[in-house]
Length: 397
Image (cartoon, rainbow, N blue to C red; front, top):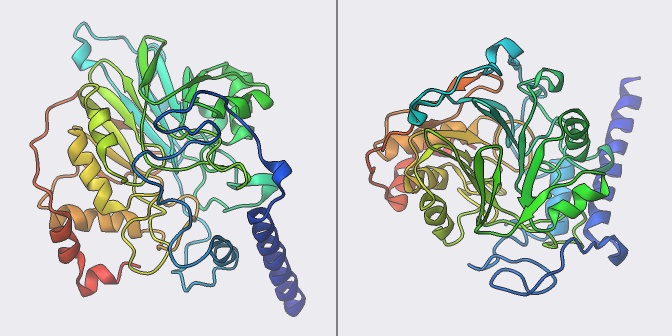
């Protein structure tokens, strides 16, 4: 019986691997034109691009087909991940109550934040519940395939308060989850803000969204939502690569702004300065995971790692940062706890012993203090990398 189960299990692995390889050579009819507009500094009339150069096309270590083969089979010597991670999901009583009063001094407006997992975060201020890249599905991919979540959502979908605003950074399946969005749409009819082209995907599923270009803004529910530049790419079917735009967000709120990086590599880094110029950032949601696609790698073109995330936090001038995009879906080589451990080590190497920017537990609501200007810490990336180049640092696979 055990041999049969073993054979069936490997058979399923090969089927998934074959499907993953198939979509990398998908027929052209799967291409979709999500957006039509005038060519500019990041749109060529057909596809979007990073104006600071495209280094996001193929993960390091070989071809795209090879990458998906390794992802499907786990054949790159990657560290083991836990099959399941315990989560103490937040209960409604732990979230910010709907009747929370606004203080007379806007600077003292309360903010409560709960990491749901991956890039999904509930941000609450009085009168406004914001949800970033909501993904409650068990797998991040089409037709039930794709990486399986190892951590349950930090809030049950039924326990979510009424959602007023959803931010969608781009169209990858671990960020744009139509089944979750449809349930939230049917229940709450939230305002949805995204970048150009992603609204066409939502529209095909019966939802409407406000789609903006980089450096455009929309006033929603007493807040101003800015769509700002980051450095990434987009695709649902590979042949539709970069038909829709990717973005970060700044939301102007009393007590200090919210910054949500979405998925991003560092690129030229100028996008950080553009976001910071929109006003003081009370809370920055910054990804630290899926940065390693071969042993020892500290960043990729599409994803910053903990070291660069620390630099982004510093350059934003944010008073508080939350590390996201790790520990929920396995998307890359590194071990499950490597991103937060490397972030802690990088902070120590940079002489930043405080925990203003760090990892938090999924499902644990946190109150964010009003904005206070942080001291400008020194940052030397090369020195930090040298500091991390120790037996202990290298043991963090």
